[in-house]
Length: 371
Image (cartoon, rainbow, N blue to C red):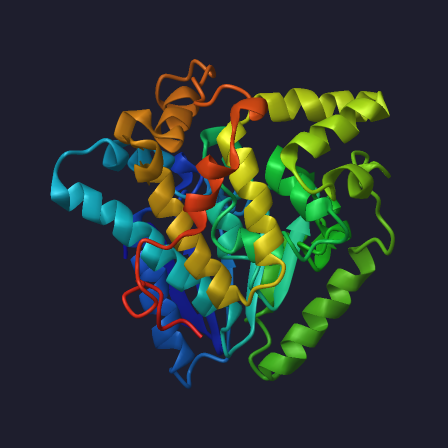
């Protein structure tokens, strides 16, 4: 398998993402291999539970998954060849199908979210039965940095964070360090990174115990290291007040009225994001809050098509927000994206609304069969 190592030991299906040079960013082949593996193991009586981890250049753990392969998104987004264009379409369809499979997996699925967990890494971990972070975990959905939106079910799981923190995380891309994720409901337990390898090994070293007993032992061990009431330093009391506002403009106005260091930092961060996508993302989170996961993923599949082929604004390829954002961050690395429109004040409802109109009929939608 491409950059995926797997084995079955003592009833545990063990997966290691093995693309450390790219921080285990997901390629199309990795998505396909994960889906095939998890589908096979779901129906395999020799597998009672699944655990997944990442790897770094020194070995296992220390990096989980940095997301999708955005360099591939850029090259495929500007490609003229139909084959490359189709690969881009296939990537998002198949990645979202994988996310849905994990959220609805019929066997326990344990995610060891040590190190970087961003974008697509959240998509293959948020549906886990047990989500384990360490003090060096760094979780984020930073897609507005590249003119995209928090996909892989982000509209579903971010919108279910407490209060308006989902809007805050989606719009700003705020990074969560370790226990921060517990407070937002994006992790279940905290482990010391020094212990995580033994926790992984313990899942298979007592084959005489049932899987249920081994998982209970894992939970007991984790409970001892998990803080009961952790408050992130950035979790300002004004988040719910400011980010619950009805529009992006009102959020900015509310932040400006706070006249605090936290609010000013929020404004500075948001001013660097794609103004158009800030409006789209706020609408995504608000809609996602009322949706099932399947409907949210269908909405996100619509959104991602519009991001690369923004027909209602006559933009695609190099002129799309997403390709431009990736260019600035990961290709040319000038960190100076030329957003269009250039400010939130220039974004109109007519620019945003078509993102939420599906380019497919309900029957023809590539994710029509998700339930």
